[in-house]
Length: 154
Image 1 (spheres, helix red, strand yellow):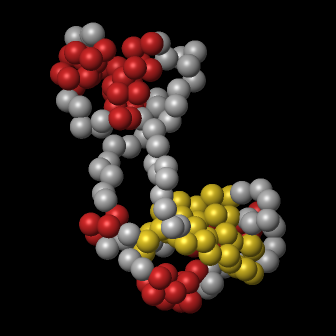
Image 2 (cartoon, rainbow, N blue to C red):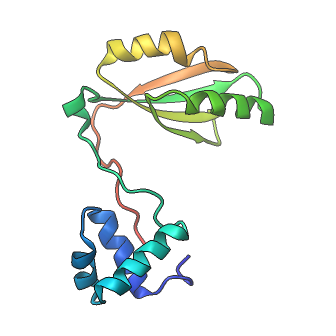
Image 3 (tube, rainbow, N blue to C red):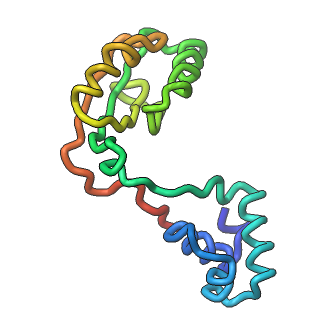
């Protein structure tokens, strides 16, 4: 990655990662290039996939999603078909923030935000255990979020 990006590109990425609301003029000034050059570079970073999306980070507590739950999932089979079926089903569930295929005791880890334990209990009993191929789940209720959604270090 870094062979394709120069120091200005990297600085732009770092600054935008910290504050996606920077205007083009502000960003141009901070990296010491013209606004037109900054705009072209930003567009290229989007086009080449270095920046994939820009969105607001919503405070979960403000929208009644203050409880963070991690769920380890074990599937009954480890086949490409069972993984594909599980992943297709997970993509449709709006309450799942992240889904990662992992190595170790679990096949997947899910990151879920809910209002409270009762919300999770309902979701678990009606939707999670009904996902294709699920043999077992193990739930971890997060007691304190020490680092969440940290900026990439590059």
